[in-house]
Amino acid sequence: VQGLGVHTVVVDTLPSMDIALSTYADGKFFAAGSGKEDKFAMYRWMLAAHRNFFSLLRETGMNLIFNCHLKAVSEAETANQGAKQRAAGSTVGGIEPAISGSGANIYKANATAIMPIILETDAKTRVQSRWAYTRSAPGDIHASSRWASILDEREPADLGAILKKVGLR
Image 1 (cartoon, rainbow, N blue to C red):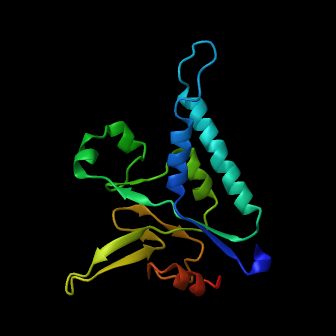
Image 2: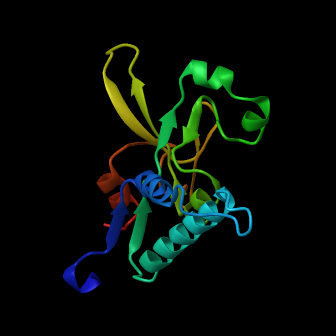
Image 3: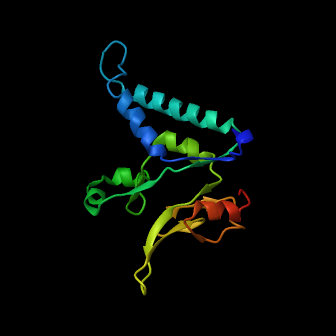
């Protein structure tokens, strides 16, 4: 693929893969002996699928960008969640990962940058724009970047411009 001029692969959206794996696997894994559904076996299978997918793409030697997305949680949903869930970090500031658990950790652990994209409205002009946060984001949402010395703390959410600024384009 690199011989064709492709240097970067963008996978959008990774949560769709998680949903597809979960939908496919639902009802297919049963505990030996009892015959009851074994959700742990299903999750182990899903984790292996994520690991294999990541490994295959990583072996290409290309730059990889995985869009994992965050989804907003309504206030009612947040209010109804148990304290144990919140303490375990399943939600942060009313936002939760659309992909979570060990599958998400495969991508996070190998990330050069984790940049939440947040839609903001200018108080004066009422114009909305999206911003990528490279260090910390409003609401204590995790952000980090190995390019912190190159990127501003808040960049316009333009992937092409960000890649150009860090020298990958």
